[in-house]
Length: 297
Image 1 (tube, helix red, strand yellow):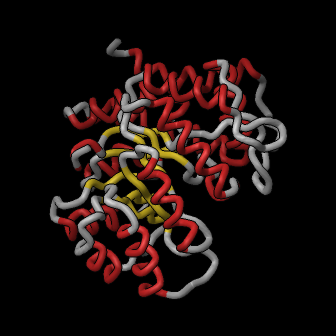
Image 2 (image 1 turned 30 degrees about the vertical axis):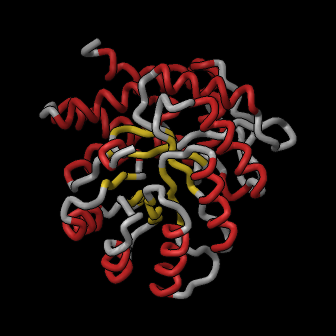
């Protein structure tokens, strides 16, 4: 895989589970085949949307192995390997490499706040554990400039996943990398806006549900169709804001209604509160988003 493979619209893959919280292999395969048939640009595994931190190390390895096997080279696969401790992250990185993943990603150190040196050392050790392209996963704002500059010197680091609403920060990282990195926006509701700031692609939860429409809108925007993208992004943002109090319930029910894929109840401590909408209303909300993709069909 070349650096230029890492671009476009990538679903942050949902991880279907059984009622006991174990990975649901058959539904996982159905979801992967759906996204391949929709010609998504890649898959991002076991991030926040994929509930990566809520699975055991062995479960994460199983999900990675099966996903890569099912994909069988038809799409690039990036695996989020960050864990509570660096050693587990390294084991997951090596497992991803050994099983044919195309890239790895990792959140920074969690729980312990140790400053830039801790973050850089954590990232460096994961990056050096394999030869795979590595994409640190930055969540929130205030990315540390010192860490960014030091990461630029690591040959394995090929970009970042930036889940932030700070567009100036994305632009600053793009300028610092001077074209060396492929940046992904991680805030679904800023998919097009982040592209102006230098992102090569977008990774997000709702691309499981609205992948073809979002891919169409992003491509159309980059071709200069600004007003349509503006209308879409405002409506998309409105939907996300509306469903946030029960986002997991909406996604789970929406995926079943739209595609017949059972994602299952999220693993604790995540909650899936009851929605105030009927199935008909959920379908109407999804149709309103997908209507944009139909305009040029």
